[in-house]
Amino acid sequence: MIKSKNPQTGSRYKDAHGALITVERVVHNRVTFYRDGYQSPCVQPLERFVKEFQEVAQ
Image 1 (cartoon, one colour):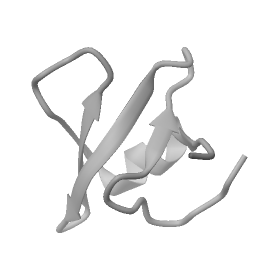
Image 2 (cartoon, rainbow, N blue to C red):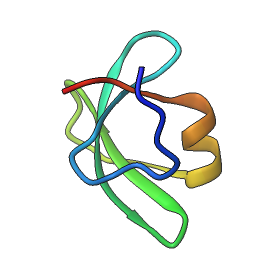
Image 3 (cartoon, rainbow, N blue to C red):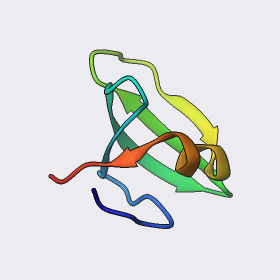
Image 4 (tube, one colour):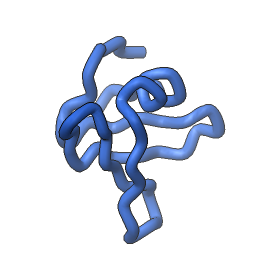
């Protein structure tokens, strides 16, 4: 497991269920990301993102 304060563009993370996501961008304390298998982006506050997702090695 890798611990990083702020996610970086292109970083891969997983949620509590093991679903993988890719970070698209971080702007104004908002993280935009794509879940694997979905075409629409998701947006979450940075604080919530770092609590709910764990970075995975690439």
